[in-house]
Image: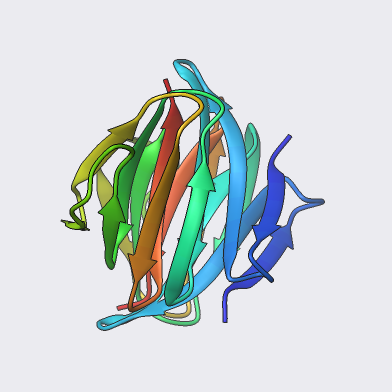
Length: 93
Length: 93
């Protein structure tokens, strides 16, 4: 099954699926600022566009460009700002 | 706007968006065999999983793994087989 989800008034949409190594979601964000919460460890990789991110426990915003990735532990909140439509791969592992 | 589409009885789902360099779709395919048609030149990149593809005018099937890409001209048909859930980025350029 491919799960389709929408968040933040449809400004973030994602497709969930399963690979040999775990669960993943592909997603697209419209320009805006979002707070996400994790229930598992996540590895987020920017596919196109760029994300400016404030990771848990950090006070600084860091920008991740296409091909770059960051990780977030389980049960954390983090903030993301995007200024153009930006796509990502989120791997739950 | 992020467009959400489904094809082949929901066995292929995609999200469309626009970047500085053109239009893109992210998608996920369930295991199966599909024939796609292009209306523009497409660059297809496998994100996770793998695709076995018969490109227009070719009689051989070629397997593309995660990170690998292939191109299809406009107004062509091509066949894709996947044996596990497989995700892709399609750039229309």
